[in-house]
Length: 267
Image (cartoon, rainbow, N blue to C red; front, top):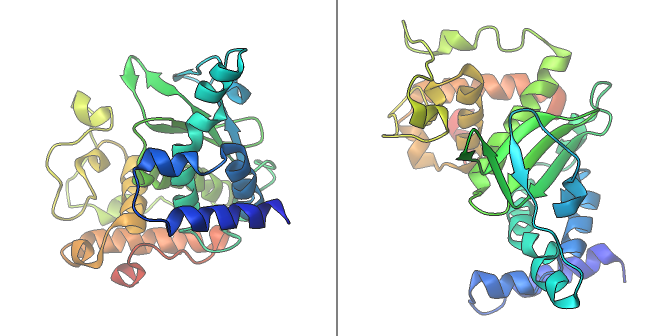
């Protein structure tokens, strides 16, 4: 039996079993087998734990727990500890159309999209759930084993998408600021917002307050909302819908059609 089919049957067993704690579901899936399936199915590369050693993205620090030498240590802190994060990736990657991730492969990024899974990520002492950066010939997304939501992964995927889009058209987002309120200026003076936090959720124009810190974060949070928010949420945000439509227009030449949580809201 092929390994991909084996994993599919395992996942079916997990998804359709009687309700159980998330930890029990994680134990039912083999992390390395799930990683192999995701790589084969979606055309991405996934590195876990010590496989990320020696990689030093600018500005960010990441921690990897040593795996140890005894069978017990390998069982407790081996790749199994990334199972929950891999299951999040499974849900996220399945939200995109077939062949979507081939769009990341280009002359500048021949290795396409890579996910690097670490135990912790921080910058200037502030913890991060995920960050996007460029590697040598690849677009990299590093994710922390804890504190990552599906929306965060969509957010980082957009950052990688944007770099890939700009490779083909460096003027792709020149008119983005025309979609903002008259007189608005991005500002990261608030330390909470600059670190990715937020206060109250804006009613329109921006997906969340973090969107107001940088232009590229505005686009990433808009895309994040496209992939996760419901029709009711979008129905009260006509100006934000225009931003979503703009992103779809710029995305299509490289990645084709994308269908979010409620695609009809911004088409």
